[in-house]
Image (tube, rainbow, N blue to C red; front, side, top):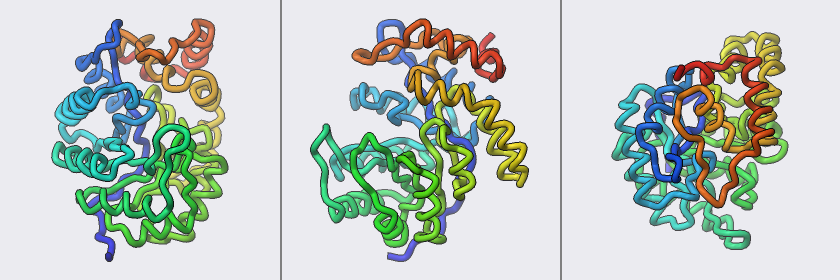
Length: 310
């Protein structure tokens, strides 16, 4: 099937929004709105919700719906919102994706089907899975190529899907040697690769930008810092981008290697954006010493998050 040209090509910094809970672990939808407002004010070109860094795996279907409706209604078109609709079932993923589109999502992000440590499907079934989702919607699909799925996605296979599946045009690559894969994917897919994107909290951002990445899906705590890297890079000022990357790398590294998804909530709590940094059990709370190290490094950089809510 020939691909249709997208009405808009999405580029820039699209961080993952955390799912905000109260002290007891219930959804805090007012806190959710504040988190979203901060991320937009801090310079996000767009947002992603219900991703793994949003703790999507601890939410009920009803909670997913409430978060999606709340965020899309509250954002109200200020920035484009990507909704993660990953599910093992082609039917469920397509239904989730159609619902996200109906509510105003700009794009859906989908991992290949997997369940647990061993439930995988062959390449032909992965192709049919994404084709089925594409047939249900008219907005772009982003393939999340991440180790958590445990599903190898070769460059020739990804390029083939980009060329043959109408709405599949964006790729968040966060596997080892991501830059090499992005570069090869752009070469193999050509114009069908509308959005080669960086992930994994920007830990490989400079290499990925050099490989041709046009978007970055990072943690949600400091989009202003990530833009200090991407803005000059896209403007042709690579040396300035490298200097900014060197400044922000200690915080990026702390999030990626020490704190994980807890980092964003801790920064937002410290800055008064949200009232609680609760992670849902069985996820453990961050060790106080680790949290202290995160905040110390952040304070040296003075990101917007530490003063937004004060």
